[in-house]
Amino acid sequence: MKTAARVTFLGACMLWAAWCPAGEGLSLESLKAAPADIVPAVGHSAAGLRLDRQWEGAVCRATLTNGGAEAVRVREVVLARAAHDYPPETAYYGEGFTMLSQTGGTLGQPVDIGGLTDRGHYRIPQPENALTAYGMFTLSPEGGPAVAMGFTSCRRFVGKFHLRADSVEAVLDLENLELAPGESWALEELWFGAGPDREALLAELGDLLGANHPPLCQAPVPAGWCSWYCFGPTVTARQVGRNLDFIAGTLPALRYVQIDDGYQAAMGDWLDTGKAFGGGIREVLGQIREKGLEPAIWVAPFIAEEKSRVFQEHPDWFIMDGEGKPLRSDLVTFGGWRNGPWYAVDGTHPEAQKHLETVFRTMREEWGCTYFKLDANFWGAMHGGRFHDPKATRVEAYRRGMEAVLRGAGDGFVLGCNHPLWPSLGVVHGARVSNDVGRSWESFTGIAREVFHRNWQNGRLWWNDPDCVLLYGSRKMTDGEFLFHATAVYASGGMTLSGDDLPRLTPERLEMLRKLLPPTGVAARFDDDSFRVGRVALGDKTMICVFNWGDAPQSATVGLAQKTRVKDYWTGEDLGEREGALELKDMPGRSGRLLECVP
Image (spheres, rainbow, N blue to C red):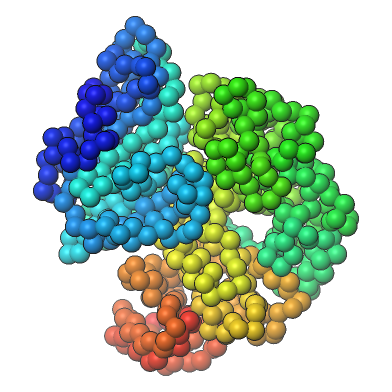
Protein backbone atom coordinates (compact mmCIF):
# COMPACT_ATOMS: atom_id res chain seq x y z
CA MET A 1 0.00 0.00 0.00
CA LYS A 2 2.71 2.51 -1.02
CA THR A 3 4.49 2.60 2.31
CA ALA A 4 7.63 4.07 0.79
CA ALA A 5 5.61 6.87 -0.76
CA ARG A 6 3.99 7.41 2.61
CA VAL A 7 7.38 8.18 4.14
CA THR A 8 8.06 10.66 1.35
CA PHE A 9 4.70 12.33 1.99
CA LEU A 10 5.44 12.90 5.66
CA GLY A 11 8.77 14.48 4.82
CA ALA A 12 7.69 16.73 1.96
CA CYS A 13 4.29 18.38 1.78
CA MET A 14 4.93 19.64 -1.77
CA LEU A 15 4.41 16.09 -3.06
CA TRP A 16 0.72 16.19 -2.13
CA ALA A 17 -0.27 16.93 -5.70
CA ALA A 18 0.97 13.48 -6.65
CA TRP A 19 -1.55 11.94 -4.28
CA CYS A 20 -4.70 14.02 -4.66
CA PRO A 21 -6.21 16.42 -7.17
CA ALA A 22 -5.71 20.04 -6.10
CA GLY A 23 -7.84 23.10 -6.53
CA GLU A 24 -11.01 22.19 -4.65
CA GLY A 25 -12.54 22.34 -1.22
CA LEU A 26 -13.36 19.23 0.74
CA SER A 27 -16.44 17.32 -0.36
CA LEU A 28 -17.97 13.93 0.25
CA GLU A 29 -17.12 12.93 -3.32
CA SER A 30 -13.47 13.91 -2.95
CA LEU A 31 -13.19 11.96 0.29
CA LYS A 32 -14.73 8.85 -1.22
CA ALA A 33 -12.19 9.05 -4.05
CA ALA A 34 -9.27 9.94 -1.79
CA PRO A 35 -6.45 7.42 -1.41
CA ALA A 36 -5.82 5.61 1.85
CA ASP A 37 -2.67 4.17 3.38
CA ILE A 38 -1.51 1.52 5.81
CA VAL A 39 1.64 2.42 7.74
CA PRO A 40 3.38 -0.57 9.35
CA ALA A 41 5.67 -0.40 12.34
CA VAL A 42 9.39 -0.18 11.70
CA GLY A 43 10.69 -3.52 10.46
CA HIS A 44 7.29 -4.73 9.27
CA SER A 45 5.67 -4.79 5.83
CA ALA A 46 2.11 -3.89 4.89
CA ALA A 47 2.22 -6.01 1.73
CA GLY A 48 -0.22 -8.62 3.05
CA LEU A 49 -2.65 -6.15 4.62
CA ARG A 50 -5.94 -5.05 3.06
CA LEU A 51 -8.00 -1.99 3.98
CA ASP A 52 -11.67 -2.13 3.00
CA ARG A 53 -13.64 1.13 3.10
CA GLN A 54 -17.43 1.12 2.78
CA TRP A 55 -19.30 4.42 2.57
CA GLU A 56 -22.92 4.52 3.72
CA GLY A 57 -24.06 8.03 2.99
CA ALA A 58 -21.65 10.36 4.76
CA VAL A 59 -20.19 7.67 7.05
CA CYS A 60 -17.19 5.50 6.20
CA ARG A 61 -16.82 2.13 7.91
CA ALA A 62 -13.49 0.41 7.42
CA THR A 63 -11.90 -2.95 8.17
CA LEU A 64 -8.22 -3.86 8.21
CA THR A 65 -7.40 -7.51 7.38
CA ASN A 66 -4.15 -9.43 7.38
CA GLY A 67 -4.25 -11.71 4.34
CA GLY A 68 -0.61 -12.66 4.64
CA ALA A 69 1.19 -15.51 6.34
CA GLU A 70 2.96 -13.45 9.02
CA ALA A 71 1.82 -11.24 11.87
CA VAL A 72 2.25 -7.53 11.19
CA ARG A 73 2.53 -4.64 13.63
CA VAL A 74 0.67 -1.59 12.36
CA ARG A 75 1.51 1.97 13.36
CA GLU A 76 -1.43 3.78 11.80
CA VAL A 77 -4.03 3.76 9.06
CA VAL A 78 -4.80 6.80 6.93
CA LEU A 79 -8.48 6.37 6.06
CA ALA A 80 -8.47 9.28 3.62
CA ARG A 81 -5.99 11.80 2.34
CA ALA A 82 -7.45 14.71 0.40
CA ALA A 83 -6.31 18.00 -1.05
CA HIS A 84 -8.06 21.34 -0.52
CA ASP A 85 -7.63 24.92 -1.61
CA TYR A 86 -9.02 26.76 1.43
CA PRO A 87 -7.26 30.09 1.93
CA PRO A 88 -5.15 30.67 5.05
CA GLU A 89 -7.78 32.98 6.55
CA THR A 90 -10.37 30.17 6.69
CA ALA A 91 -11.80 29.93 10.21
CA TYR A 92 -10.83 26.71 11.94
CA TYR A 93 -11.75 24.80 15.08
CA GLY A 94 -10.26 21.50 16.19
CA GLU A 95 -10.76 19.38 19.29
CA GLY A 96 -7.93 18.05 21.42
CA PHE A 97 -7.26 14.58 22.71
CA THR A 98 -7.56 15.93 26.23
CA MET A 99 -10.34 18.08 27.65
CA LEU A 100 -7.90 20.95 28.15
CA SER A 101 -6.73 21.23 24.54
CA GLN A 102 -8.63 23.14 21.83
CA THR A 103 -7.48 25.06 18.77
CA GLY A 104 -9.18 27.94 17.00
CA GLY A 105 -8.10 30.82 14.79
CA THR A 106 -7.53 30.13 11.10
CA LEU A 107 -5.73 27.59 8.97
CA GLY A 108 -2.92 30.07 8.47
CA GLN A 109 -2.81 31.30 12.06
CA PRO A 110 -4.11 28.66 14.46
CA VAL A 111 -4.56 29.75 18.07
CA ASP A 112 -4.49 27.63 21.20
CA ILE A 113 -7.77 28.36 22.98
CA GLY A 114 -6.44 27.02 26.28
CA GLY A 115 -2.89 27.03 27.59
CA LEU A 116 -2.55 23.32 28.46
CA THR A 117 -2.13 21.76 25.04
CA ASP A 118 -1.80 18.16 23.95
CA ARG A 119 1.52 18.76 22.21
CA GLY A 120 3.02 21.01 24.90
CA HIS A 121 1.64 20.28 28.35
CA TYR A 122 0.85 16.60 27.78
CA ARG A 123 3.69 15.95 25.31
CA ILE A 124 1.52 13.83 23.03
CA PRO A 125 3.58 13.19 19.86
CA GLN A 126 2.33 15.07 16.80
CA PRO A 127 3.85 15.84 13.38
CA GLU A 128 5.53 19.23 13.45
CA ASN A 129 4.49 20.18 9.92
CA ALA A 130 0.74 19.83 10.47
CA LEU A 131 -2.14 21.13 12.54
CA THR A 132 -3.55 18.18 14.50
CA ALA A 133 -7.13 17.80 15.71
CA TYR A 134 -8.57 14.84 17.59
CA GLY A 135 -12.08 13.53 17.12
CA MET A 136 -13.36 16.38 14.94
CA PHE A 137 -12.64 19.68 13.23
CA THR A 138 -14.56 22.34 11.32
CA LEU A 139 -13.63 24.79 8.57
CA SER A 140 -15.77 27.86 7.88
CA PRO A 141 -14.57 29.60 4.70
CA GLU A 142 -15.85 33.10 4.00
CA GLY A 143 -18.81 32.88 1.64
CA GLY A 144 -18.66 29.13 1.28
CA PRO A 145 -20.25 26.16 3.00
CA ALA A 146 -18.90 25.11 6.35
CA VAL A 147 -17.38 21.64 6.49
CA ALA A 148 -16.89 19.27 9.38
CA MET A 149 -15.12 15.95 9.73
CA GLY A 150 -15.29 13.67 12.71
CA PHE A 151 -14.80 10.18 13.96
CA THR A 152 -18.20 8.98 15.13
CA SER A 153 -16.87 6.21 17.34
CA CYS A 154 -13.99 5.72 19.77
CA ARG A 155 -14.12 2.14 20.96
CA ARG A 156 -10.51 1.17 20.39
CA PHE A 157 -8.39 3.58 18.36
CA VAL A 158 -7.56 7.28 18.64
CA GLY A 159 -8.85 9.15 15.59
CA LYS A 160 -7.13 12.34 14.52
CA PHE A 161 -6.73 14.72 11.61
CA HIS A 162 -3.57 16.30 10.23
CA LEU A 163 -4.28 19.54 8.36
CA ARG A 164 -1.78 21.36 6.19
CA ALA A 165 -2.06 24.39 3.95
CA ASP A 166 -3.37 22.33 1.04
CA SER A 167 -4.30 18.95 2.47
CA VAL A 168 -5.97 16.96 5.22
CA GLU A 169 -5.66 13.35 6.28
CA ALA A 170 -7.86 11.29 8.60
CA VAL A 171 -5.69 8.98 10.69
CA LEU A 172 -6.24 6.16 13.16
CA ASP A 173 -3.44 5.42 15.62
CA LEU A 174 -3.06 1.64 15.82
CA GLU A 175 -0.23 1.89 18.37
CA ASN A 176 1.98 -0.74 16.71
CA LEU A 177 -0.42 -3.51 17.69
CA GLU A 178 0.06 -6.90 16.08
CA LEU A 179 -2.46 -8.09 13.49
CA ALA A 180 -2.30 -11.88 13.17
CA PRO A 181 -2.65 -13.75 9.86
CA GLY A 182 -6.33 -14.01 8.93
CA GLU A 183 -7.33 -11.51 11.63
CA SER A 184 -9.49 -8.43 10.91
CA TRP A 185 -9.99 -5.25 12.90
CA ALA A 186 -13.06 -3.06 12.67
CA LEU A 187 -11.81 0.53 12.66
CA GLU A 188 -13.46 3.68 13.95
CA GLU A 189 -16.13 5.32 11.79
CA LEU A 190 -15.39 8.50 9.83
CA TRP A 191 -18.00 11.13 8.91
CA PHE A 192 -18.06 14.19 6.67
CA GLY A 193 -20.58 17.02 6.56
CA ALA A 194 -20.94 20.24 4.61
CA GLY A 195 -23.58 22.96 4.60
CA PRO A 196 -24.42 26.58 5.33
CA ASP A 197 -25.12 26.03 9.04
CA ARG A 198 -22.14 24.88 11.10
CA GLU A 199 -24.32 24.31 14.17
CA ALA A 200 -26.49 21.91 12.19
CA LEU A 201 -23.38 19.97 11.18
CA LEU A 202 -22.29 19.72 14.80
CA ALA A 203 -25.76 18.53 15.77
CA GLU A 204 -25.54 15.80 13.12
CA LEU A 205 -22.13 14.75 14.41
CA GLY A 206 -23.48 14.67 17.95
CA ASP A 207 -26.37 12.44 16.94
CA LEU A 208 -24.02 9.99 15.20
CA LEU A 209 -21.72 9.90 18.22
CA GLY A 210 -24.72 9.28 20.45
CA ALA A 211 -25.84 6.38 18.28
CA ASN A 212 -22.47 4.65 18.71
CA HIS A 213 -21.99 5.69 22.33
CA PRO A 214 -25.42 6.18 23.94
CA PRO A 215 -25.19 9.10 26.38
CA LEU A 216 -25.63 8.36 30.06
CA CYS A 217 -26.94 11.81 30.98
CA GLN A 218 -30.53 12.08 32.19
CA ALA A 219 -32.59 14.90 33.64
CA PRO A 220 -32.31 16.69 35.95
CA VAL A 221 -29.03 18.44 35.29
CA PRO A 222 -26.92 18.35 38.48
CA ALA A 223 -26.57 21.40 40.70
CA GLY A 224 -24.51 21.62 43.84
CA TRP A 225 -21.52 22.97 45.72
CA CYS A 226 -17.81 22.13 45.45
CA SER A 227 -15.13 22.73 48.07
CA TRP A 228 -12.14 23.17 45.74
CA TYR A 229 -12.33 26.84 44.76
CA CYS A 230 -12.81 28.15 48.27
CA PHE A 231 -10.69 25.73 50.32
CA GLY A 232 -8.43 23.83 47.91
CA PRO A 233 -6.46 20.79 49.09
CA THR A 234 -6.50 22.00 52.72
CA VAL A 235 -10.27 21.52 53.04
CA THR A 236 -11.50 20.49 56.49
CA ALA A 237 -14.60 18.80 57.82
CA ARG A 238 -15.50 21.99 59.67
CA GLN A 239 -15.46 24.09 56.49
CA VAL A 240 -17.66 21.59 54.70
CA GLY A 241 -20.05 21.52 57.64
CA ARG A 242 -20.44 25.30 57.67
CA ASN A 243 -21.40 25.34 53.99
CA LEU A 244 -23.63 22.31 54.42
CA ASP A 245 -25.64 24.14 57.08
CA PHE A 246 -25.93 27.18 54.82
CA ILE A 247 -27.13 25.14 51.84
CA ALA A 248 -29.66 23.17 53.86
CA GLY A 249 -31.12 26.32 55.37
CA THR A 250 -30.90 28.76 52.47
CA LEU A 251 -30.36 27.10 49.09
CA PRO A 252 -31.27 23.38 49.05
CA ALA A 253 -31.45 23.50 45.25
CA LEU A 254 -27.68 22.98 45.47
CA ARG A 255 -28.47 19.31 45.82
CA TYR A 256 -25.00 17.77 45.64
CA VAL A 257 -22.49 18.73 48.33
CA GLN A 258 -19.14 17.71 46.88
CA ILE A 259 -15.94 17.29 48.87
CA ASP A 260 -13.00 17.82 46.55
CA ASP A 261 -9.31 16.94 46.61
CA GLY A 262 -7.77 17.08 50.08
CA TYR A 263 -9.74 14.58 52.18
CA GLN A 264 -7.63 11.54 51.24
CA ALA A 265 -4.51 10.25 52.97
CA ALA A 266 -2.57 10.02 49.69
CA MET A 267 -3.21 10.23 45.97
CA GLY A 268 -4.46 6.73 45.20
CA ASP A 269 -5.66 5.80 48.69
CA TRP A 270 -9.22 7.01 48.22
CA LEU A 271 -10.79 5.07 51.07
CA ASP A 272 -8.34 6.44 53.67
CA THR A 273 -8.94 9.85 55.28
CA GLY A 274 -6.00 12.19 55.78
CA LYS A 275 -5.35 13.58 59.26
CA ALA A 276 -5.51 17.20 58.07
CA PHE A 277 -9.16 16.80 57.09
CA GLY A 278 -10.05 16.89 60.76
CA GLY A 279 -12.76 14.26 60.75
CA GLY A 280 -13.81 10.97 59.22
CA ILE A 281 -14.93 11.35 55.63
CA ARG A 282 -17.78 8.88 56.16
CA GLU A 283 -19.14 10.90 59.06
CA VAL A 284 -19.16 14.12 57.03
CA LEU A 285 -20.87 12.41 54.10
CA GLY A 286 -23.43 11.03 56.53
CA GLN A 287 -24.15 14.53 57.80
CA ILE A 288 -24.85 15.62 54.22
CA ARG A 289 -27.40 12.85 53.87
CA GLU A 290 -28.99 13.71 57.22
CA LYS A 291 -29.59 17.27 55.95
CA GLY A 292 -31.58 15.88 53.03
CA LEU A 293 -28.83 16.54 50.48
CA GLU A 294 -26.71 14.27 48.29
CA PRO A 295 -23.14 13.34 49.30
CA ALA A 296 -20.64 13.88 46.49
CA ILE A 297 -16.92 13.23 46.35
CA TRP A 298 -13.79 13.81 44.26
CA VAL A 299 -11.71 10.82 43.13
CA ALA A 300 -8.79 10.49 40.70
CA PRO A 301 -9.10 6.76 40.00
CA PHE A 302 -6.30 6.38 37.47
CA ILE A 303 -3.39 7.89 39.44
CA ALA A 304 -1.36 7.17 42.55
CA GLU A 305 1.61 8.83 44.17
CA GLU A 306 4.69 6.77 44.96
CA LYS A 307 4.19 6.74 48.73
CA SER A 308 0.55 5.64 48.50
CA ARG A 309 -0.38 2.33 50.00
CA VAL A 310 -1.96 1.09 46.77
CA PHE A 311 1.24 1.70 44.80
CA GLN A 312 3.52 0.22 47.43
CA GLU A 313 1.41 -2.92 47.80
CA HIS A 314 0.36 -3.43 44.17
CA PRO A 315 2.94 -1.99 41.74
CA ASP A 316 1.82 -4.56 39.15
CA TRP A 317 -1.52 -2.75 38.80
CA PHE A 318 0.12 0.16 36.98
CA ILE A 319 1.14 0.95 33.40
CA MET A 320 4.68 -0.31 32.83
CA ASP A 321 7.76 0.97 31.04
CA GLY A 322 9.81 -1.04 28.56
CA GLU A 323 11.67 -2.83 31.36
CA GLY A 324 8.53 -4.03 33.11
CA LYS A 325 8.65 -1.44 35.88
CA PRO A 326 5.86 1.05 36.76
CA LEU A 327 6.18 3.99 34.37
CA ARG A 328 6.79 7.39 35.98
CA SER A 329 4.34 9.66 34.20
CA ASP A 330 6.74 12.61 34.06
CA LEU A 331 9.00 10.62 31.72
CA VAL A 332 6.38 10.71 28.95
CA THR A 333 3.87 13.44 29.88
CA PHE A 334 2.91 15.93 32.59
CA GLY A 335 3.77 14.32 35.92
CA GLY A 336 0.86 15.70 37.96
CA TRP A 337 -0.10 18.94 39.70
CA ARG A 338 0.49 17.71 43.25
CA ASN A 339 2.44 14.91 44.94
CA GLY A 340 3.95 13.77 41.65
CA PRO A 341 5.26 12.17 39.66
CA TRP A 342 2.15 10.05 39.43
CA TYR A 343 1.87 6.47 38.31
CA ALA A 344 -1.08 5.47 36.11
CA VAL A 345 -3.45 2.61 36.89
CA ASP A 346 -3.62 -0.02 34.13
CA GLY A 347 -7.28 -0.44 33.25
CA THR A 348 -6.57 -3.75 31.48
CA HIS A 349 -5.30 -5.46 34.65
CA PRO A 350 -8.08 -7.64 36.12
CA GLU A 351 -7.04 -6.94 39.72
CA ALA A 352 -6.84 -3.20 39.06
CA GLN A 353 -10.35 -3.37 37.63
CA LYS A 354 -11.57 -5.13 40.77
CA HIS A 355 -9.87 -2.46 42.86
CA LEU A 356 -11.58 0.38 40.98
CA GLU A 357 -14.94 -1.33 41.24
CA THR A 358 -14.45 -1.91 44.97
CA VAL A 359 -13.51 1.72 45.65
CA PHE A 360 -16.61 3.07 43.96
CA ARG A 361 -18.96 0.41 45.28
CA THR A 362 -17.74 1.20 48.79
CA MET A 363 -18.31 4.91 48.25
CA ARG A 364 -21.74 4.35 46.73
CA GLU A 365 -23.16 1.62 48.98
CA GLU A 366 -21.36 2.19 52.29
CA TRP A 367 -20.57 5.91 52.17
CA GLY A 368 -23.80 6.89 50.42
CA CYS A 369 -22.19 8.96 47.64
CA THR A 370 -24.44 9.57 44.65
CA TYR A 371 -22.13 11.86 42.66
CA PHE A 372 -18.50 11.25 41.74
CA LYS A 373 -16.22 13.93 40.34
CA LEU A 374 -13.46 12.02 38.56
CA ASP A 375 -10.22 13.88 37.90
CA ALA A 376 -6.92 13.15 36.13
CA ASN A 377 -8.67 10.68 33.84
CA PHE A 378 -6.15 11.39 31.07
CA TRP A 379 -3.56 9.24 32.84
CA GLY A 380 -5.77 6.20 32.28
CA ALA A 381 -5.11 6.67 28.55
CA MET A 382 -1.48 7.74 28.95
CA HIS A 383 0.80 7.15 25.99
CA GLY A 384 4.28 5.65 26.08
CA GLY A 385 3.67 2.64 28.31
CA ARG A 386 2.80 -1.04 28.20
CA PHE A 387 -0.41 -2.63 29.43
CA HIS A 388 -1.10 -5.93 31.18
CA ASP A 389 -3.12 -6.89 28.09
CA PRO A 390 -0.61 -6.53 25.23
CA LYS A 391 -3.41 -6.46 22.65
CA ALA A 392 -5.13 -3.44 24.22
CA THR A 393 -4.88 0.16 23.07
CA ARG A 394 -4.78 3.08 25.46
CA VAL A 395 -8.41 3.81 24.56
CA GLU A 396 -9.39 0.29 25.58
CA ALA A 397 -7.35 0.49 28.77
CA TYR A 398 -9.11 3.70 29.78
CA ARG A 399 -12.58 2.51 28.84
CA ARG A 400 -12.16 -0.81 30.69
CA GLY A 401 -11.13 1.13 33.77
CA MET A 402 -14.13 3.42 33.38
CA GLU A 403 -16.46 0.46 32.97
CA ALA A 404 -15.17 -0.85 36.31
CA VAL A 405 -15.83 2.57 37.86
CA LEU A 406 -19.37 2.58 36.50
CA ARG A 407 -20.06 -0.89 37.83
CA GLY A 408 -19.01 0.22 41.27
CA ALA A 409 -20.80 3.59 41.13
CA GLY A 410 -24.11 1.91 40.32
CA ASP A 411 -26.81 4.54 39.92
CA GLY A 412 -24.44 7.36 40.90
CA PHE A 413 -23.63 10.30 38.64
CA VAL A 414 -20.09 10.20 37.19
CA LEU A 415 -18.41 13.41 36.05
CA GLY A 416 -15.23 13.21 33.98
CA CYS A 417 -12.57 15.90 34.45
CA ASN A 418 -9.14 16.27 32.87
CA HIS A 419 -10.22 13.38 30.68
CA PRO A 420 -9.46 12.18 27.17
CA LEU A 421 -12.44 13.62 25.33
CA TRP A 422 -13.48 11.11 22.65
CA PRO A 423 -12.46 8.02 24.68
CA SER A 424 -14.90 9.20 27.38
CA LEU A 425 -17.92 8.92 25.09
CA GLY A 426 -20.60 6.79 26.71
CA VAL A 427 -18.71 6.23 29.98
CA VAL A 428 -19.44 9.50 31.82
CA HIS A 429 -22.70 11.24 32.69
CA GLY A 430 -21.11 14.68 32.74
CA ALA A 431 -17.94 16.14 31.28
CA ARG A 432 -15.89 19.17 32.21
CA VAL A 433 -15.43 21.21 29.06
CA SER A 434 -13.02 23.87 30.32
CA ASN A 435 -9.93 24.48 32.37
CA ASP A 436 -10.22 25.29 36.08
CA VAL A 437 -11.95 28.60 36.68
CA GLY A 438 -10.20 31.35 38.63
CA ARG A 439 -11.32 34.56 40.31
CA SER A 440 -10.22 36.91 37.53
CA TRP A 441 -11.56 38.52 34.37
CA GLU A 442 -8.95 36.68 32.29
CA SER A 443 -10.14 33.35 33.64
CA PHE A 444 -13.83 34.18 33.20
CA THR A 445 -13.35 35.02 29.51
CA GLY A 446 -10.98 32.13 28.83
CA ILE A 447 -13.33 29.61 30.41
CA ALA A 448 -16.34 31.01 28.57
CA ARG A 449 -14.63 30.71 25.19
CA GLU A 450 -13.59 27.12 25.89
CA VAL A 451 -17.12 26.20 26.98
CA PHE A 452 -18.99 27.91 24.14
CA HIS A 453 -17.00 26.00 21.51
CA ARG A 454 -18.41 22.83 23.08
CA ASN A 455 -22.01 23.92 23.66
CA TRP A 456 -23.14 21.52 20.92
CA GLN A 457 -22.08 18.58 23.12
CA ASN A 458 -24.39 19.46 26.02
CA GLY A 459 -27.25 16.99 26.32
CA ARG A 460 -26.10 15.13 23.20
CA LEU A 461 -22.94 13.47 24.52
CA TRP A 462 -23.17 14.27 28.24
CA TRP A 463 -24.08 17.17 30.50
CA ASN A 464 -21.44 19.83 30.03
CA ASP A 465 -19.72 21.07 33.16
CA PRO A 466 -18.58 24.70 32.63
CA ASP A 467 -16.84 24.50 36.02
CA CYS A 468 -17.99 26.27 39.14
CA VAL A 469 -19.67 29.64 39.30
CA LEU A 470 -17.65 32.05 41.44
CA LEU A 471 -19.39 35.17 42.70
CA TYR A 472 -16.78 36.94 44.79
CA GLY A 473 -13.16 37.84 44.23
CA SER A 474 -10.66 40.65 44.70
CA ARG A 475 -11.79 44.23 45.18
CA LYS A 476 -10.57 45.03 41.68
CA MET A 477 -13.25 42.85 40.12
CA THR A 478 -16.41 44.63 38.97
CA ASP A 479 -20.09 43.73 39.10
CA GLY A 480 -20.05 43.57 35.31
CA GLU A 481 -17.37 40.89 35.32
CA PHE A 482 -19.44 38.70 37.61
CA LEU A 483 -22.52 39.32 35.45
CA PHE A 484 -20.48 38.16 32.45
CA HIS A 485 -19.44 35.01 34.31
CA ALA A 486 -22.92 34.16 35.58
CA THR A 487 -24.40 34.73 32.13
CA ALA A 488 -21.74 32.47 30.61
CA VAL A 489 -22.59 29.67 33.04
CA TYR A 490 -26.26 30.09 32.13
CA ALA A 491 -25.40 30.04 28.41
CA SER A 492 -23.60 26.73 28.81
CA GLY A 493 -26.88 25.02 29.67
CA GLY A 494 -24.88 22.57 31.73
CA MET A 495 -24.23 21.73 35.33
CA THR A 496 -24.22 24.48 37.96
CA LEU A 497 -22.03 24.09 41.02
CA SER A 498 -21.08 26.93 43.32
CA GLY A 499 -17.41 27.18 44.19
CA ASP A 500 -17.79 29.85 46.87
CA ASP A 501 -17.62 29.78 50.64
CA LEU A 502 -21.35 30.45 50.65
CA PRO A 503 -21.70 32.37 53.94
CA ARG A 504 -19.44 35.03 52.40
CA LEU A 505 -21.88 35.84 49.57
CA THR A 506 -23.68 39.18 49.67
CA PRO A 507 -27.49 39.05 49.37
CA GLU A 508 -27.20 40.36 45.78
CA ARG A 509 -24.75 37.66 44.73
CA LEU A 510 -26.76 34.99 46.52
CA GLU A 511 -29.80 36.05 44.50
CA MET A 512 -27.72 35.80 41.31
CA LEU A 513 -26.77 32.24 42.25
CA ARG A 514 -30.39 31.43 43.02
CA LYS A 515 -31.39 32.56 39.51
CA LEU A 516 -28.97 30.05 37.97
CA LEU A 517 -30.99 27.23 39.53
CA PRO A 518 -32.12 24.81 38.38
CA PRO A 519 -29.92 24.48 35.28
CA THR A 520 -31.94 24.51 32.06
CA GLY A 521 -30.07 21.72 30.28
CA VAL A 522 -30.25 23.81 27.09
CA ALA A 523 -27.09 25.41 25.74
CA ALA A 524 -27.11 28.74 23.93
CA ARG A 525 -26.82 28.77 20.17
CA PHE A 526 -24.66 31.73 19.18
CA ASP A 527 -25.24 34.01 16.22
CA ASP A 528 -21.58 33.66 15.18
CA ASP A 529 -18.14 32.75 16.46
CA SER A 530 -17.67 36.10 18.15
CA PHE A 531 -19.85 34.68 20.95
CA ARG A 532 -21.42 38.08 21.52
CA VAL A 533 -25.07 37.02 21.24
CA GLY A 534 -26.42 33.58 22.12
CA ARG A 535 -29.98 32.29 22.37
CA VAL A 536 -31.38 29.67 24.73
CA ALA A 537 -34.67 28.27 23.41
CA LEU A 538 -36.86 27.18 26.34
CA GLY A 539 -40.16 26.49 24.63
CA ASP A 540 -42.41 29.27 25.90
CA LYS A 541 -39.60 31.82 25.99
CA THR A 542 -36.13 32.59 24.70
CA MET A 543 -33.26 33.71 26.88
CA ILE A 544 -30.78 35.93 25.04
CA CYS A 545 -27.22 36.12 26.36
CA VAL A 546 -25.26 39.21 25.37
CA PHE A 547 -21.54 39.59 26.12
CA ASN A 548 -19.11 42.48 25.91
CA TRP A 549 -15.70 40.83 25.82
CA GLY A 550 -13.82 44.11 25.52
CA ASP A 551 -12.76 46.81 27.96
CA ALA A 552 -14.69 49.66 26.34
CA PRO A 553 -18.48 50.18 26.15
CA GLN A 554 -20.11 48.66 23.07
CA SER A 555 -23.56 48.78 21.58
CA ALA A 556 -25.26 45.63 20.39
CA THR A 557 -28.19 44.97 18.08
CA VAL A 558 -30.11 41.82 18.94
CA GLY A 559 -32.48 40.49 16.32
CA LEU A 560 -35.94 39.37 17.46
CA ALA A 561 -37.97 36.82 15.50
CA GLN A 562 -41.31 38.24 16.65
CA LYS A 563 -42.87 40.81 18.91
CA THR A 564 -41.76 40.00 22.42
CA ARG A 565 -41.78 41.29 25.96
CA VAL A 566 -38.21 41.77 27.17
CA LYS A 567 -36.99 41.74 30.76
CA ASP A 568 -33.49 41.89 32.19
CA TYR A 569 -33.23 38.54 33.97
CA TRP A 570 -30.64 39.65 36.52
CA THR A 571 -32.13 43.00 37.56
CA GLY A 572 -35.81 42.36 36.81
CA GLU A 573 -36.01 45.59 34.76
CA ASP A 574 -38.90 45.56 32.26
CA LEU A 575 -37.59 46.68 28.87
CA GLY A 576 -41.04 46.71 27.30
CA GLU A 577 -42.39 45.17 24.12
CA ARG A 578 -39.91 45.02 21.25
CA GLU A 579 -40.20 43.94 17.63
CA GLY A 580 -37.62 43.34 14.91
CA ALA A 581 -34.55 44.20 16.95
CA LEU A 582 -33.44 45.29 20.38
CA GLU A 583 -30.77 47.98 20.63
CA LEU A 584 -28.49 47.79 23.65
CA LYS A 585 -26.68 51.12 23.82
CA ASP A 586 -23.23 51.48 25.39
CA MET A 587 -23.14 48.15 27.14
CA PRO A 588 -20.32 48.50 29.71
CA GLY A 589 -17.02 46.82 29.00
CA ARG A 590 -16.38 43.47 30.63
CA SER A 591 -20.02 42.68 31.21
CA GLY A 592 -22.88 40.39 30.30
CA ARG A 593 -26.64 40.65 30.12
CA LEU A 594 -29.31 37.99 30.19
CA LEU A 595 -32.62 38.96 28.59
CA GLU A 596 -35.85 37.05 29.10
CA CYS A 597 -38.00 37.27 25.96
CA VAL A 598 -41.62 36.12 26.08
CA PRO A 599 -43.83 36.43 22.93
